[in-house]
Image 1 (cartoon, rainbow, N blue to C red):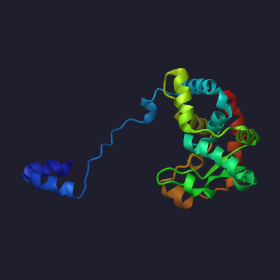
Image 2 (tube, helix red, strand yellow):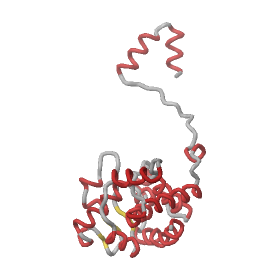
Image 3 (cartoon, rainbow, N blue to C red):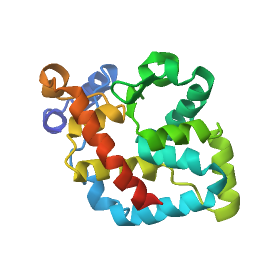
Image 4 (tube, rainbow, N blue to C red):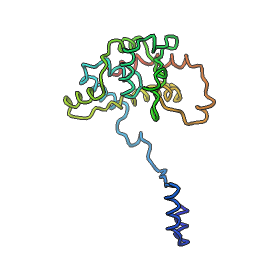
Length: 215
């Protein structure tokens, strides 16, 4: 912004504007408020709304509960159920770590801007996978709209999962990994190398308590 003011003072603003457009220079405001101050969906409110969604989508309870306990995006969760039924546990589940290995199917889970690498599961979630009926996102959304006359806030489940795990002192880096976010810090990218299994076990230990909050 200082350069813009200087160009106006010197009487060369038009030339400066052309150079700015030529090289695609844009001003970025850095005064945005943190989302948690603007969003009225605090943890308690999100839980209430999530329970309502589960009740309305009762025919697909297993699907929605798996979504809620996985921390995945909606389409990732639905693809996970579909691939589990198509490929079977032996081609998807790492029994030693107790995780679904999404990276085995990069064409589905490793996309340009959204990724899913692994998901921690327990015996309850494995039962959900086995009993869940594969269903499309459009079908779930239209069913919900017909019965509630409102949009279905599936994104709440992902926020609940992340908030709950953070409250239980799960490392932010592990939450990002399990939700498919590529870390941006130099520490996470190049130096953070924890023993993975104990951290995954910590997440698995918290899943039953999260389930009780939702049911």
